[in-house]
Image: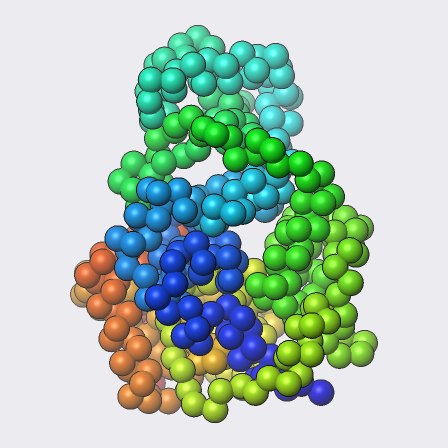
Amino acid sequence: MIDAATIRAWWSHRQGLDGSLLGKKPAEVLERSGWARSVGGVGPYMTLHARAGTSRTAADEAVARLEIHELPSARGCTYVVPAEDFALALKVGQDFAAAPMKVATKLGVTIKEIDKLCGAVLKALTDGPLDPEGIRERVGKAARSLGEEGKKKGVSTTLPLALGRLQAEGEIRRVPTSGRLDQQRYRYTLWRPNPLSGFNLSVDEAFSALASKFFRWIGPASLAEFQWFSGLGVKAAKIAIEPLQLVPLEEGGSLILFAADREELLAWKAPAKPSYVLVSSLDSISALRRDFQSLLEPADVKRASFAEMAKAPGAALMDLPNHAILDRGRLVGLWDFDAEANEIVWISFAGQAKALANAVKATGSYVRDQLGDARSFSLDSPQSRRPRLEALRRAKNR
């Protein structure tokens, strides 16, 4: 039997949250720990800083050099991925990217119409990057409004249909207007050479390649967790992992991993000394499996402070209510940034060790001096965050 604390520490080790990735380049960090979920918040920056000490400037420079890039990918969601995975990320996201077109056809939009619009967009971008309004002006009548009915269904014009398809096909890419990953204002530019050029994996082969990466990033994990990450159905997920010859961590258990990784884990010893690290609410250690309960000690789930943060019974939780504080993979606290007071507000479930206070202080300096704020997602703001901050302060003062 492998105890829960060892598995948590192993996940932390595989994720590079144990200091083993300090000083590594952003692409190397993402190759090891997995694609960083990107929703217009600080997730990608925190992913890199927590593992490698990466500055915001270094992360932005890696984006500018196309060493890493934000792409529509698994489940149709956006991730920041390393260059070696650009083609794979696009491939596994293509079916999901086509979903808006299925809605649009019911509004009278035809494939031929979008083909023509795609051609107009590519022509418009030949002179350089443009924002959506600039593209709209260039393509003229090739793009049209879908009226009130389209707004109700989330497809107000035909232009996003063309932009989404061209991104999924690797013909164009989005470039952050400010060069930063924690905002959602973009320009679009031609992508030459197309990263999918010469990529010959079939859809099934691509998802098997994704499964291989997933279980390297975060194994042991369950089939259901890979299914959620990939967006596949049960049957397709089983087909994807079949070539990998994964083995159960324990007989009869749901957690599976590569046989060689299992042998390494069985012989591995978890660190005895605490190691505190502050990560985002969408860090890969929990977001890849969409499960942070396994990072908690059972007693912590029942804490009144945690229940207040979560606003739901612990057994029903899937997403972190705040950013997280970890110790060797164990969730030992929560934090958020008060942009008005210019400070981190946090609570701990595991005492107030000096090393923990130092980790909070260092992260506070990083957020304050380099990021300016620590939004969880694009619509998160200092104003909307106030209830979360007040709940953290109440919990800490008990």
